[in-house]
Length: 317
Figure (spheres, rainbow, N blue to C red):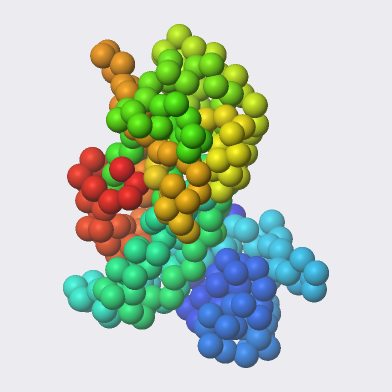
């Protein structure tokens, strides 16, 4: 379905519809736009009248659901807003002049270490952009990027859809998490063979879980998986209680020193022949849609903050 630009359609109506669709409720859209919910509802109703079709269904318990026509209109409406934003930003080189909402995503385990510094840096440079973030896992974030509900997302650059484009930010190396009383607690590095007899507390979230299994396979080992979890906190607690060891790809920010948490984190000793590229944290967005000024600024600030892949020396590496 192609929608021609009707002179009676205003950018304000389009903006109200897009924000309501992205937030899922009229009340949240009204909060973000600093308007009354009734005004948002009337604006969308007028847009529906012009289009000649119902764009969304409002249910008290489930919020706002787009109709099939609404989904098509939403995608084209976002493109229209992005184009308008692009035109308005042609003469604005100062990021402090960029305005409007931005919704970004982040792979769940990366959130504590990436989102806080990014929000702080971005707020300093783009104070008029209202950023909302969504934490999720690999497939969910890619789906959200492709359906247009988020503008960009921090992900591991593995098993990425060809429909997405990525900007590599930093490389991360694997670590082995040991119980605090483990015999190897004083070792500088630990190999997978060193802990091959220990049960594995498996961080079960692709694509990192796939990389962990590949590491065992490359070492000629089969992991003895005792427990699986998608929570770093749960994995850490199970290791601390002596249930096994874990392989992680980052040093998660903790609410207490490792010693107090009764765990020890050790770099993985790499084999002499190491052919696999390091895991890379990247920022991803939809290849088919040009980044609007807000999303482009988010990408630029991320690259400035973390640097090209391999150059960052912060808590993830």
